[in-house]
Image (cartoon, rainbow over all chains, first blue to last red):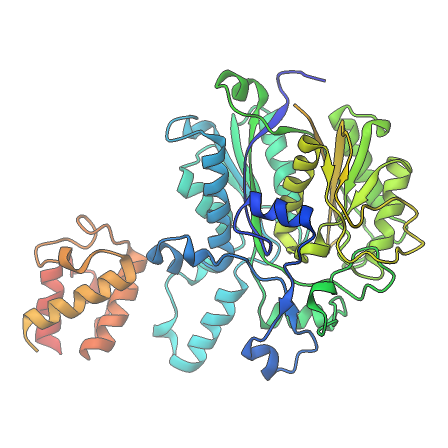
Length: 411
Length: 79
């Protein structure tokens, strides 16, 4: 369905545990490489954390950003800026491709500047007020990644920062889609960023009993849908997409990856961390996304799943998929490779989903050796699967009962 | 410490905090108008200068230090 008012994707950027850009991340997903490795930080040892694995960035942002710029940014802001610059360059908009008053930015984060908060708290303890950075607040505020991307691009149509835990990146894309459909902007740069592999976030997730402790086999620890999964692995990174009104993109002769054809959001109203056990809220988000895209369930050949490798969560999502779409889509869950990027995951996985639609190939789910019988759907394992795709769905769910589904189609 | 040494030390701080090349940090330059240093970076520069030169730079004094030369003079007479 083409209305001219559709939303197309023209630029991609990412920095992840699998690679410093989209191409290297995508290659690693197809090749089945893991980004998970031993975590030997001093604090993990000091506090005797039972989790000693994580999925850190493959490329340090300080290798890419100028030194002075990097020191003014929290790590979650650094990755947002790195990915946004890649996406902007990829879209070919240059310095004057869009009127700044028609350019928006929506970048979400789940946690925000936790490293700054902890680091500055240490400073006031050890050295007093005068050593606290005057940049503390802009570095820890959760709208920091969005604000810095907005400043970098001089976006003036609105800069927004949705916060919905692990759905934040997807929620940002949904928000961007709505801005474009409402005609509030011609171009919106949108995605998610997260970088909080640090004491308190790790400790909190550990105490919530959500993390894998398969410390002796880091690369095998994140195993969505596998019967032996024991929790997620914390990752970090950012994914940013350049979205445009189709009419605008076509008029400027942009290279188009595909369409963000529709979005759907819902909330469980059930529990602060646990998803509704039957996945009713999740299936409502999927169904809403299909309706907004004008795509029938029969046309959805693939679902890029949120599945994080937790015992409880992984078996709820397949129920939602079956209820909203049916038994025919093939699934994959990329967190097996790169762990859980929290507020960045929805955006990084949106990129993966879009590339699956464009290239007709679905990456395997890493470490899925014995599928949980409750999944009851086909999940790609081993080698990438070639599948002609008309439409694919990408799900993201967050603590708080936030559900976001995105539908991607070929342009 | 000579004014020349103070200026050299201050230039190192400005380079570290704001990325302005030390050679550009000359006495007639305005921190804001010439070196493009914002008020947040000025606070960082002042704290580092206090430590390096053993001076106190209260906020009402900091507000008067418009140029590199102003800062060098203040530090020289208060250190």
